[in-house]
Structure formats: structure tokens, C-alpha cells
Length: 183
Image (cartoon, rainbow, N blue to C red; front, top):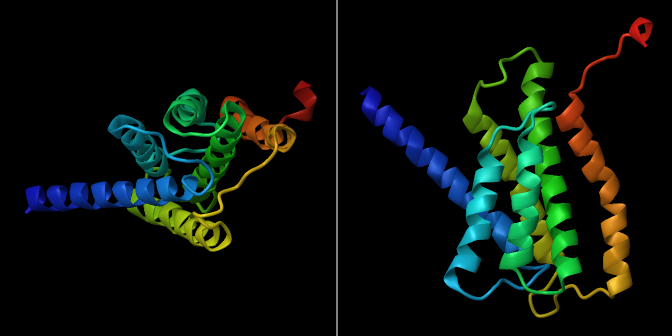
């Protein structure tokens, strides 16, 4: 019976991962053209699936390790200008990591264990991406992809730097109250 539950649990985890990776990949494809070649098409879906289902808490170093692979995946696996790929990768990274941190850290705020009910966390993350997927697919037509000038892409990159630094700060320095006497 335990083996059957383990197999069922693994199957559920794989289904959540594949569905989440697909939703994210199809959402990104409304912003950037997919790359050519099988490997360039598969790598982003794999990265999205792993990132979506990976636990990420406030104070967790995982986002630091994910930023470079995330940006490299956008650079090498999608079309468009290098600037548009980097900015889009940064924005999607920020949304994904911020939501992951909120969902996974919320268990600590309500007094639960950080590792409790990983499947519920995955479902909440998946639900958020489903909403984003629906909104993006409603607003952006595949026949008319987003086309911004180089200056607007640069502006979007500058504006997205602040949330990126905030997320990395939460990853590096944790979320701890400061003792004013020790300052």
C-alpha cells in the first residue's frame, strides 16, 4: 500500500510540474518567440516546472542560484533581441520567485511547518500561473506579439531591477526583526 501511495504521489508531483511548466512556457511564448530546435524548446519548460514546484522561503538562497540559469535560459532558448529576452526573463523570474516565497513562507506565518503539505503549495502556485496564463492569453494575441522599442525594453529592465533587488535581499539577509540596541 505504501508503494502505491508513493507511486501516486510521484505521479501527482510530475503532473503538477508538467502542467505548471507548460502554463509558464505558453505564457512566455506570448512575449517572446520560442527558439528553434528541440532542446531550445524543452529546456525552458523543464526549468519552469522545477522552479514552480521547488519550495522557496524568505531567507532561502535558492533564488540566488536560480537567477543565472533563468536568465541564460531566456537568452539562449527564446528569440527576440538580447535585451527583450533578459528583461522578460527577469520579470518572469521575479513574479515566480515572489509568489513562491509568499506561498511557501505563509505556512510559517500561520504557525505551520515549512515543509508541510507541499502539494497544496504546488497547487496554489499553479493556480496563480493559470490566472496569469488566462490574463496574458486574453490580452496578447499570438498574431500580434509585444513589440517595444529598445528604449522601452531598457526602461522595463530598469523598472524591474528594484523588485529583483528586493527579492535577492530577502534571499540573502532573511526576514528578521532588527534589535535596535545592537545597532
